[in-house]
Image (cartoon, rainbow, N blue to C red; front, side, top):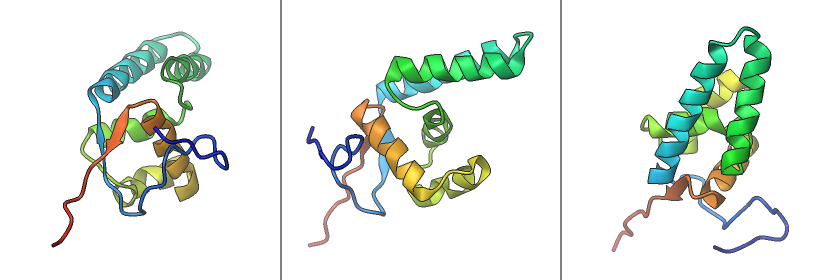
Length: 120
């Protein structure tokens, strides 16, 4: 993978309409995320348990805690930033935040870009 020194989280530049697919490791990460969240929701101090579960999950995959929301949506079939807009709005995330999350998930090999067939 290439490395961009100007933005350490950016792996390689990608187009604004770039589509991504969740990898097998990404699907494992989603299952782990759901497991962490359901365990935390059953705890006595839910708020603290949820925050700790998000931190543990993120550390395991070398991403940020908020990346779990987006990865879960992508595993549900959303493939690009435009399709994630509703989730971004609900979480108070900007497009810049989403791009950084996609870069982190790509670096962690949780998502890969879909190759778009070129027009001849």
